[in-house]
Length: 127
Picture (cartoon, rainbow, N blue to C red):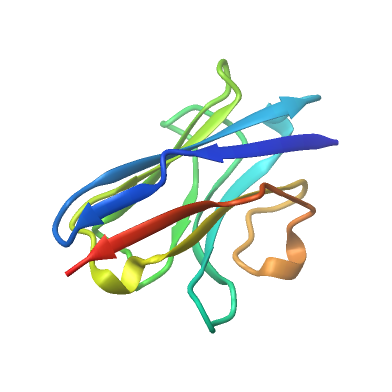
């Protein structure tokens, strides 16, 4: 199993940046594909980005939702058991609770395919 704890959320003005981090504990972080999801008030949880297991930027595969493409970047550091989400050019519609998630197997972008979840961190973007 793996335990996930998100950090880095907060309040930021539109156009600003935030960097979210997710610290993983447990066994074999490098065997998990990692994802970020978000849930805005009154809306369903949605996929944001995902990264494959390798931890080597030469070989990592990533997925990214169209709504954040070009603005958000996912990365991981297997030596530190962390996955990060760099968020630039933030918009009010990015306001949500952001969740880190982990899964074995192949890279995926659907909620049901992820096995482990963090508690979430709030991101609020003011206009």
